[in-house]
Length: 401
Ligand code: FAD
Ligand code: NAD
Image 1: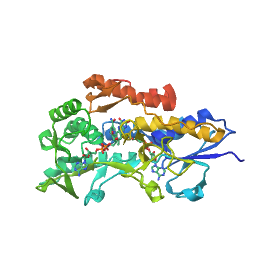
Image 2: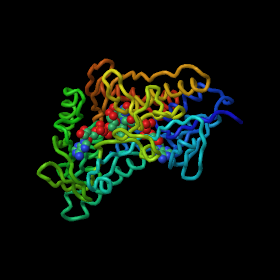
Image 3: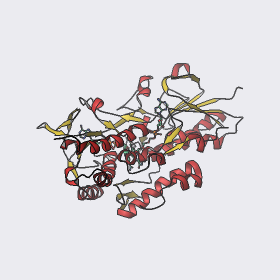
């Protein structure tokens, strides 16, 4: 009855893998593990651009949590976290309250709109399974309206704000999806515009220039338009206002991929934020809190080599889960907590269909179908870690395209 209580908030990459590791480390009698999530399913955030564009069957990107987590070992709580009362070691949920001895906060990201007027209200974002599915339905609805409404050319214009990895992967999927929609709704493809607007002078700022250039050309070849060095200033229901000359672009769909930050519950619960996230100690604990770990997109972990935080990715979140589980064991049984060390395996981005590019193993560059095959291997590796070969067979992407 006095088993220590470990509560994990959020069943994304960080939360799922931490739970999995804890069940591997501890016997039923040793700790009580509780995993809280908004939905009874886990979704693959890294596939949401495909859900949003409609290039994947949505259900393929989600997994029932109880299919991969042993419910005899873990209490699955299907509820929404409202607040973390860290001084009382309690978590307030929409329908309940939980006490914890050790807390793992893995509530993921939400969009950051940097106060751009109208962005919050008028733009879609690739933030969750539901919101991504909504984008897909919305775009299709614009296409179906087109032939029924006079003078509505802008319905076929899709504006994507921000050319980071999310924006680029999304326009790549759109480039594949648009020809299908044109066929379905008898629309001339020349009437459709996919416009990706980026404030920086190039797409994928900070990434390898040669690969970014390759991605831009591949996308332009498939009719994606880029407006680079162009800041989105304002967003209205049917247009965006961009650049110093305040150009107006009329559109039927605006998708904001201009930035993300920690789930706002973290800041609202009194954790100190730097640029939207908590900078955690090297053992992944929240500064000043011995029993609270903050993982994944809710935190920054410093790369001691260059004094900058690692960019938050699924790859990072999963590796953090291992360290977190080890450190919870060290706290319970004594022993030294370990520092997190990131093993960067590379960055590969899909560009739609059989197109992709990226770096693997010490910056070896990959292009085209080779990169796409690698991307599929990365996706399948995660499924394997989570649910073994059975899950790979059910949901995997083992074919190159
Ligand atoms: P998430 O995966 O966001 O999970 C958070 C979980 O918490 C969700 O299940 C959510 O339902 C739940 N939750 C949220 N709020 C509550 C609440 N109040 N109560 C209860 N539960 C809640 N990274 C890569 O490494 N490689 C990639 O190829 C890649 N591709 C990407 C493609 C896209 C389109 C996007 C958007 C991101 C991509 N990323 C990629 C980044 C990566 O997805 C994130 O870094 C990663 O999802 C972070 O994992 P997480 O566990 O912190 O959060
Ligand atoms: P991001 O912050 O990396 O990119 C946002 C982009 O929007 C930036 O290029 C920024 O200059 C631009 N921007 C911001 N404000 C703007 C404005 N007002 N007008 C025009 N452009 C504006 O965000 P993201 O792409 O969502 O990526 C988030 C994280 O997820 C990153 O760490 C990324 O590496 C990771 N991710 C990885 C992959 C992958 O590995 N394949 C895919 C998707 C996301």
